[in-house]
Image (cartoon, rainbow, N blue to C red; front, side, top):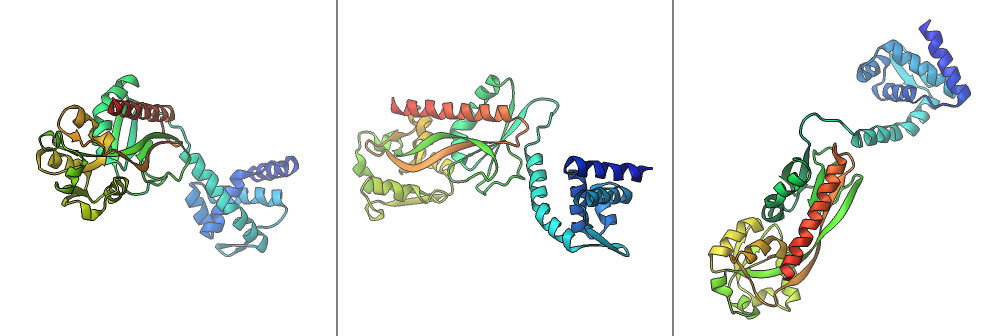
Length: 313
């Protein structure tokens, strides 16, 4: 009785030209697994259900796709051609649907911000997160840092980066065009000119090997014109060193602006130069809270704009 229903549904599909997508999915699984039994296990259904799907697809296409040889299910030549044609597009559809799925989660809204800019996060982003949380109705913001290229299987809603790219659908915002400055403790650099860089050691940040050469070119200097100081992995490690030591640091202005305004550091006059790097924020389409993610990116853009305006005053 059930078989006749499936047969009639296949004939209706053929008559109405409605593509039997479930049947195609079952066939592709059989082609991949090599048997109806393994395909049924992979799909979480019964062998008889898979067989009925195959019957529907055979009626729709008007050709045999599978030749049974004992327990194996070998593809016919037509079946092989069809499997090669539809397998990849079907996987793409499934992947895209999962990525863009909107799930309703219970409890407090929560987003994950991933960033490759650890010093930017510690000096500007994290100190202001409570303001965003209050503005967004108490949303919880988790922050993780990573220098590796993100993938669509990683768990994050927003990426803030300078040098990485997102390979999946996402909205993006330009949040900051990086400006470099040379800073030092006020008791060391107060009243001094740019020539001080020839006599005071400048710290080296190994995670940003581009900064110092870029800045030197902008200042018409070479590495032979300065004294090389100690090495640090990241700017956030170097900041305490430059605040308490007899050394200088060339860094993005946005990460030292609060320290400059607070009097812990001072910018050497004439040391400002663009690096050519741009900070961007991405809100990925697959976020469980896409509107909150986009709202966060807009908020970060405003935060950086305020910081830039404060630098200019």
